Amino acid sequence: MLSSKKRIKIIKAKYGRKPIGAKKVYRLLKRSIRKRRPISVIRLGDVMAKLLARHNIKSLKSVSKFLGIKLPPSRKLLKKIDRSVRSAHIVGLSHYKGSARLIRAYMRKTKWRPPVVTDSFINDRLYEGGYLRRLLRRYRVALVGRAAPEAAERLKGRGYRIPLTVSLDHARELRRAQSVLRRHRKKYDLVFVGGGVPGRILCTRVAKKVRRSAVEIGHMMDAFSHPHAWSKKGDNRKVFKKRWLRKLKKHKR
View (cartoon, helix red, strand yellow):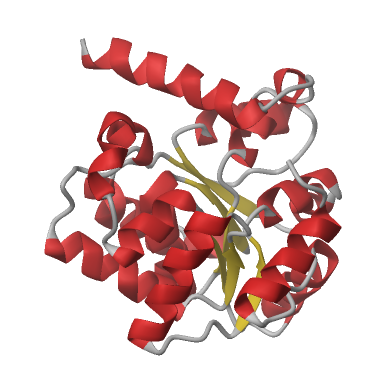
């Protein structure tokens, strides 16, 4: 993986926008909670780029269960993805050549300009910089996603308050997850979501309809679940992705 500085330089060159860093995202989240003006933070990587641009979506078929969507995606689902992305307050943009090309094409076609941009690896940067843990110490944080129950158990064992945990394995569970979050909204101040493609949709819905700030942290939910395994050298994203694919395949049987 390229260094943060190199990624930022590439993103600035490809999109003509200077991305904000983890510290700034952290400050904006704190301000949103203090002023009760919810914001959503989501990321656009390879998968989201293909879905937004409607490009080579069939290449995602082998990992569709991991992504939490059914392929080919329905028009209804694609519209939900479009709405969620265009209503996000802070958007992490990919620095990879192919993904950046698709995202730029989508921006031109829809005339969409994200209010604030950051690095698509902002979740890693928030985790590595200790900002996610600061938020967990400072606020009541609800966890949403496939790995949320394990993450909650691990974090509670370390003294963190986790007032609410909600599973989210597939897009068909979006309505239920949103309903649970709405029903218990007084119990938490902020939401961390690690739910694949549905997670992006849920984040913006939480900010807009549940009136709580939400951050799509992706694989960092796995890092909270298994911190020692995550800290090992190598591409931990691929390692954990393979773990989930094996689990999902076994569960399907």
